[in-house]
Length: 96
Image (cartoon, rainbow, N blue to C red):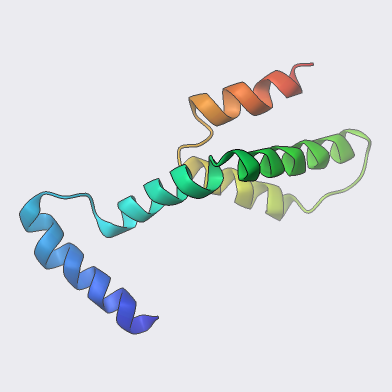
């Protein structure tokens, strides 16, 4: 893994910057968002898990706040909590 990381950093430094391309890290985040998180089956599973955690907390169960914070941080880094994911899936459900 360390060797792969070195190769990708080298690509970013020498090739990507010269060709004005998206960095390997940013490209990876974008593809992960598009192909994994926003894939319909994964998105449904993710929504159900978050809704279940919120429901359990509403009923007084004490949850691991670190997990919820980590999920929020991941969504923020992936820009998923902006329009499509947060507004369509979670906000509507929370307001019911």
